[in-house]
Amino acid sequence: MAYSDKVLDHYNNPRNVGSLDKNDPRVGTGMVGAPECGDVMKLQILVDEETGVIADAKFKTFGCGSAIASSSLATEWVKGKTLDEALKIKNTEIVNELALPPVKIHCSVLAEDAIKAAIEDYKRKRAAREALAGKAS
Amino acid sequence: MQRMIYMDNHATTPMDPRVFEAMRPYFMEKFGNAASRNHRFGWEAEEAVEKARQQIADLIGASPKEIIFTSGATESDNLALKGVAEMYAEKGNHIITVVTEHKAVLDTTKKLEKHGCRITYLPVGKDGLIDLDMLRDAITDKTILISVMYANNEIGVIQPIREIGRIARERGVLFHTDAVQALGKVPIDVNADNIDLASLTAHKIYGPKGVGALYVRRKNPRVQLTAQMDGGGHERGMRSGTLNVPGIVGFGEACAIARREMAEESARLARLRDRLMNRLLAELDDVYVNGSLEHRLPNNLNMSFAYVEGESLLMGINDIAVSSGSACTSATLEPSYVLKALGAGADLAHSSIRFGLGRFNTEEEVDYVAGRVIETVKRLRELSPLYELVKEGVDLSKVPWTAR
Image (cartoon, rainbow over all chains, first blue to last red; front, side, top):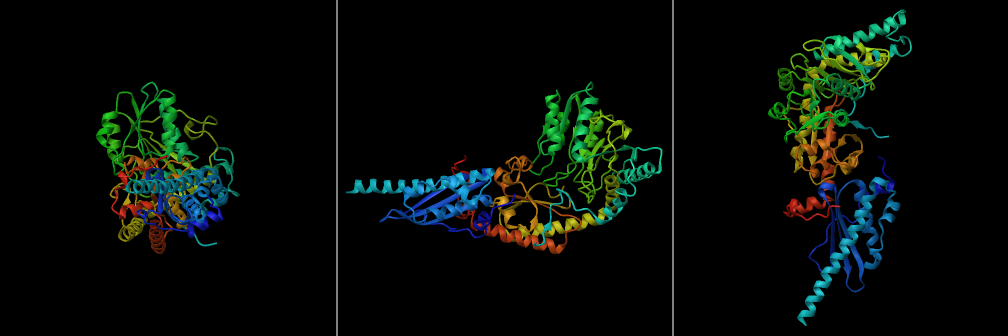
């Protein structure tokens, strides 16, 4: 299978590889997929509490080149966006940007799921913290 | 363009120049039809075909009359299974085979099931080998055929062919083996092994594509087949169609070379394979050899590199031609059924690479490949959330994955 130049670029120079401290209250972590299925993506966001903007994002992916590229691209795209803006990122935009063939569409779906899961995790942590703060006062 | 290293010799092999030279005259000058009985063109073609038949027979201890030419091993497997099922339908309808067979066998047995055959698919152990007691227990008075491949195309594991042949002979059941990967790598002796039918192909032994053969035993017992291709009655009526003379000449030459050089070549390939394996095992953690090392083709290495997906690994070593059991590299989008049959878990199938060494691979290439694989696995593990979790001490089997 031939890969698009953009997939190759992300595979060879993945952006924002790494991990954020998942115990940091400002960090949301999304882990989607399963090893038996051949893809697992971990995507993390660091949210600026003042502005509600995603200040940083990191990923690690077990999967094919297209899965690596989709998650690498996802971290680039969420950075600088508010949570609501990031939630609007659609897998079809990833497909178009990376010129993914039909058999690789599931990689883009997984990347979209990873963004959503990270945001959900962040929101859940924040809600728990606020509930705790409410009780304390 | 950068130079590519070819290390996928289970898929196909480059032609040996000596084979090509042997074939050359049979395209333009000696173009005759081997079935033309009344002129020189036909005679010289027939003579060339008979020489090749002898060369092929010699490599497996058969007599030349027992070699039926086909278009390749897929056709040979089809002819063996369907031909026996049809010919011996009155005797029985039960066939025994193995879950790790090539699709040319498994898809054929599936078709036969639709036509009233009963098929037993023997499982394999973690080493890839069948259990002979299970084979014995599976035989009934309706069993007409046992079909077990000589050596597996993915993991190179060699089945206990001689024992299987003995069991088949004792129970009066025919024994077919797909010997494609074993031919020219390990000594095959159809008489010592009690093989009744064997599928062979030229392009895995440095011969041309599009030509294969089926060995069909002629005595003790005399095996009969119902032809699957009707026509001019070529090949003792078992396979009609004008013979592919240049291809057959090439197949014969490839067998003659293999017969002369096999012992030395297999020893060399085993040395190279072990060199590759030892380096990968020494420099990487969590890598596993799939299938038995002891009962294995000398040129095969199939390894899983845990926490790294196979297709992404292939992408990183894109100047090296090898193959993977990863779902992403298969037409069906399923991970290797052979590796899954070993019970290793689908995750290790996704992480597997098959190295198939061949006549033209050098020690220098092996060292280069080892280095590239090691560097790429390390790089991809830096990217792998699974590797990170394991390093943190997490048991991956306990993680609640969001399987889709």
